[in-house]
Image 1 (cartoon, one colour):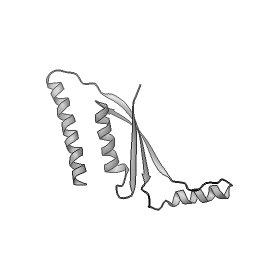
Image 2 (cartoon, one colour):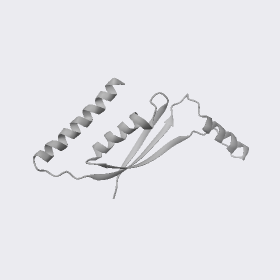
Image 3 (tube, one colour):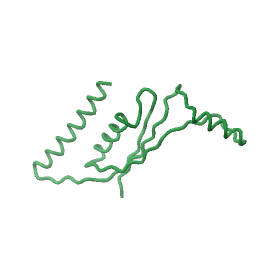
Image 4 (cartoon, one colour):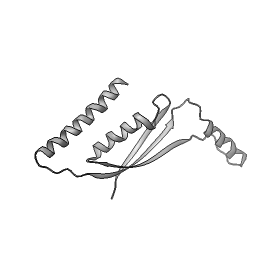
Amino acid sequence: MFIEALSIVLKQLFASLTIKAFKSFGIQTCVMRYWLKIEVSLKPGHSDPEGETTARLLKELGYKVETVNVSKVYSVFLEAESRREAEMKAEEMCKRLLANPTKDNYSFVIEEEK
């Protein structure tokens, strides 16, 4: 966990220094808008009472379902100077707030706003 946190800090520092270096040479950096779709789901083996209840009710309604897994999807619009910076921020959001590393898996998709 310490190594992951250190890795995030070093990546952010590198990105920040790179941007500062460009600016010090008078090179303009542009801010882009990105759309993040972040999905957080339970790791295998963790209880999913909402999914179990939903599966049971769907079966009662006549649907032949085996299991239902519930996950959360966050849609985030983000400003960043590069796709790499947007990826680092998405990763940081997941680790700091959106996902509990003990019980959750997460994944994200990033698209540049057009």
